[in-house]
Image 1: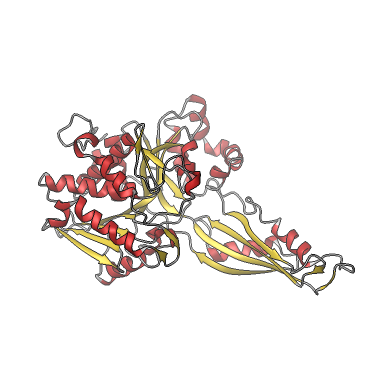
Image 2 (image 1 turned 90 degrees about the vertical axis):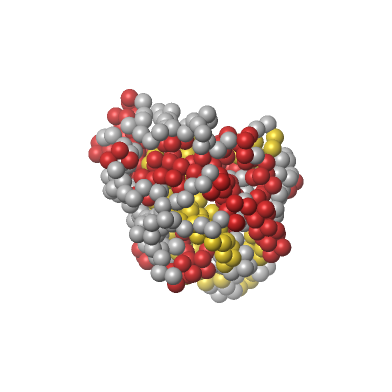
Length: 475
C-alpha cells in the first residue's frame, strides 16, 4: 500500500496555508458558460486565461513549462521532464461550464462563496475543480523545486459541454501532428462513491476505463392526411406510438457478466460484508440475481446494457386533421460491448413488424476498453495516488456513462482513463449539471493532493511489485 498523505507532512498541500478554496472560489466567479456548439462568451474565456496567469505565476514563468493557446480559447501546457526516453502522459479538464437557472440556486451560481465549509458555484464538480487541482499541485511542486523526470502535458478544452469540437478536437489534432503517443491520459469521469453498494462501507473509487457510445435515431410513421371525422384505423400517430413504446430503457438485453462490471464487483466483494461477499465473489452462481437487482435501478441498469430513452416527439398540424407524418427521437447510450451498427440492427429487429422507418441522426462509437490489470502503468499510478489520499478506498474499473473530451484523444494512447477524485454519495450526484453545485473544502483539498501524488508517482520508470495494487481486476 502506498504511503498515506497526512496533513502534518511537509509536502501536504494545505487549504489554509495555500488559500486553495479562496482561489478556487475566484475561478468559479468567471462565467465560462457553453450554451451550444460555438455559443460561448469569448471575453469570459479570455478573462479566465488572465486569471490563470495571475494565480499561478510559477507555472507561467518556469523554464520547464511551455504554455500554448489552442483554437483561441483552449490551453495546453507542456511540462518538460529530464528523461526523454520515458513516454509522456497527459492530464485533462475543461474550462467551460453548463448554463444555470439562477432562481433555483440557494446561493449565486457565480458568486464564488464559501459557506459552512463548502465552495459554491457552477463548475465546482464539473470540472473546474479538476482544472484548478492540477494547477495548484503543479504550482506547489514547482515552488518546491521539483523537476519532473517524465514529461507530461496538461490540456484544458474550452467547449467540452458542446462535445469539444472547437477545443479538445484541435488539441488532439495538434498533438497528433507532433507524433505524440502517451503512456496514459486522465480526464474527468466517474467519482469516489460512498454508500453506493449494499454491504460495502468503504468508499469506492470508480476509474472509468471506457465510455459509452452515443446514438440518436429518428423513428417516423407515415399515412395519408385526412379529416379526423373519417380517420383510418391507425393514424401515423398511433403507428409511431406503438414503435416508440418499444424503446423503453430495457429494450436491449442485459450484458451482465460479459463486461467490466464482473471484475468491478469482484473487487468490491473483497470489501463487502460476509453475505454480500459470498454473492459478489460467486458470480457463476449468483450472476442472474445480480443482473436482476442491477436492472431494478436506472443507474446500475445503465451499466449492464445499451439503454434507450424516447426524448422528443412531434406530429400533426391541427387538432382535426390526421397527420401524414409523425416522428420521434430516441437517444441511446451504447454499451462498449456493442457498436453502433449492432445497436441499429437490434433496433430494427425490435420494430420489425411495424410500418415505421429508423434514421440515424447522430452517433459516436463506444470507446475501447483501456487496460486495468496489475501491469497497466497508468491505471496503477491512479490507484496508488487514490491510496495516498484515501487508503481505505476500493479502486475499481468502471464504465463512464457521460461523454468526455477523451473522444478526441483516442488515437493518442491505448490507456485512457476518466476519473474525478471527488468523494460523494448517491444523493449528491444530482449536483452534477444540477442546481446548488458545490464541493466541500476538505474534498477539494484531498483532490489537489491526489494530483500532486499522481505527478510524483508518474515519475517512476516502471511498475514494481510493490506498486501493483490488490484492487486491480483481471482483464
